[in-house]
Length: 559
Image 1: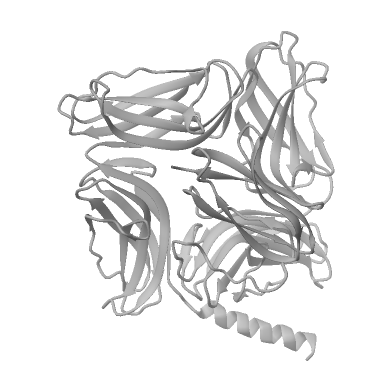
Image 2 (image 1 turned 30 degrees about the horizontal axis):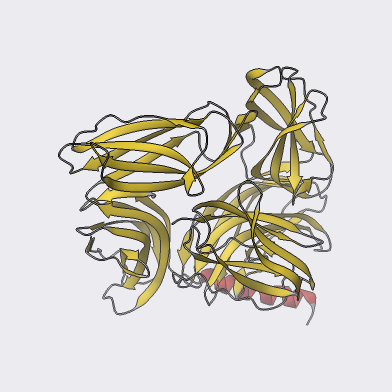
């Protein structure tokens, strides 16, 4: 078949897929936001957007789940018949009696007469129901953060209680399952029965301390009876030297032209009487990004102050996935602090910007519902360019996808649009890849991956069973599921060729606490179970290391 005929056939097939219309739920908002302790009969309010191709409309139910079953003693909203097309919906649920922890919300979409289940998925949450409540929790500064000794972490929250004599509420920093060393924290007045607001603070006065959760405890007025306990996962690194309030003048994710600067401002604290130097540098897959240029550092004097810096990329087609902040002494012989901030900056001679997606991620869809996008572009290729948006799952093109063809976009700057869908199966699209090719499709001009969470098909509480056919094209270490967990979780990883793999778990002090894999693995998709029953609650790191690839992710044990 000639190339023109093949292209015409592909266009017809893809256009046909474009006209199909599935069903979707996205933009789910919960109030109060989890994690929260709630009082009996206190509602969790739910709003969402939906789309359906069912001509008779649909009904949509959101129900609380505990341990894989409907939560006991729940009450929840009925559903109107939502008409075909797109719109917005609402719902609620509550627990009427009995101490219950809601760990997921099940969404179900049925046809109008409820004879066919069209879509089902689960959203993980933590709502603890009892006679008392702590909710609308706000923690400042936002986690993660590097913090100097004696700097406060502040909390505000609302409470409810039926305790006639009132209650006391304390917020305390935790490292693992124990109180963090060298902390100072607020006392508590007696908060009266009923509903009100409260606040608190803590700080670390000395030592290198990682705070990985905040325990909020409500007790009786005399402190003898514990009424409610919540743990809020955080990551604060307390040090004698710190870099905080980091601000980038370019919001991530962003596609940038070569030589475009990313400006940075920050605050710092140091006890070194000779002053310090601070170097923000772009990193890609654990190493300095190639072809970078960056500002030098003055000597920042002892005490606290503010600084600024910038970096850029001079050549190539690269993605910066983190920025390392390095604080050294004045003559750069000692390292006081190394701190990484995740980002997603893509540098190239060609750019994509202002991507608008519909549905927005996270979204849950049936087969053949389109993920659509519009964007601005610029290309330096004199012959113009083709631009493609494609779904990826665990480092490979998603199975059973159909997607748009591309027109030839004119040289210079302009606007474009794209779409893709999954035609069958249960598939989690966890990345969206944008590529730009020259007119003859002989040269890749631009490649950029954006994170996504687009679930096609039904998702069980045990996780997503997406197709893993074929040998993977790249190394990948995936996020564990479930997370947080107690005591078991599953970790998936993939290798494109046979190689030595070491996969280990570390605490936040860098101590190795478990080795999950340490052997030669064949090319393919692999999965290993991690049992954390002998470890304390908190945040841990798991790291995959091969001769060609290193990747680290976080997991959380919540007991």
